[in-house]
Amino acid sequence: EVQLVESGGGLVQPGRSLKLSCAASGFTFSDYYMAWVRQAPTKGLEWVASISYDGGSTYYRDSVKGRFTISRDNAKSSLYLQMDSLRSEDTATYYCTTGLLKGFDYWGQGVMVTVSS
Amino acid sequence: DIQMTQSPASLSASLGETVSIECLASEDIYSNLAWYQQKPGKSPQLLIYYASSLQDGVPSRFSGSESGTQYSLEINSLQPEDEGDYFCQQSYKFPLTFGSGTKLEIK
Image (cartoon, rainbow over all chains, first blue to last red):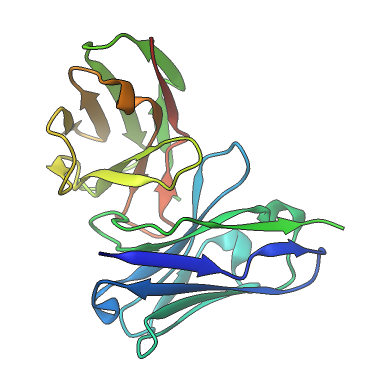
């Protein structure tokens, strides 16, 4: 059974940092592009970043470019999102998800990040 | 960026009815379009990919189609469990973009 379990969320002050982790199991992690998708409270879905199979290519939405870093450790079947210089508009539930061209086929349960003073 | 214009924002339909949700891409995305369902408090679930391919385990009452840059999700024989939010998403070009969503209520 495929499982994606996010962790690392919480309440953080503007300008501070937070690192999200996603532990994957039930599939061959290195065979999948991975991504982070977020959803602000009562809002729609927003793609944040994607990473290629071996981590050699990364892609970001403009609003997080230079502040967020997506990475992966295939030996540990884990995905990460380092979030620096956090802003109030980054407040959202962050989902770890698999895939790219065929859509995002597996999703974690999500982890809440609240940026507030 | 590719804009995905989704409509309607909400709709209400009765059990057994058929409904359709539309997404208009701002440029050609060559069928790289996925549909998701999200129930309250839950993670999104992939329904359709490549515009019309049904994801494993998804009931056959869900179907997708396309006409140019217009993409449609049709749900036949509405069931109570179909209530939720639906989103389209293009996977043709970065940044990947979603439609704004459609809230489906079952009367």
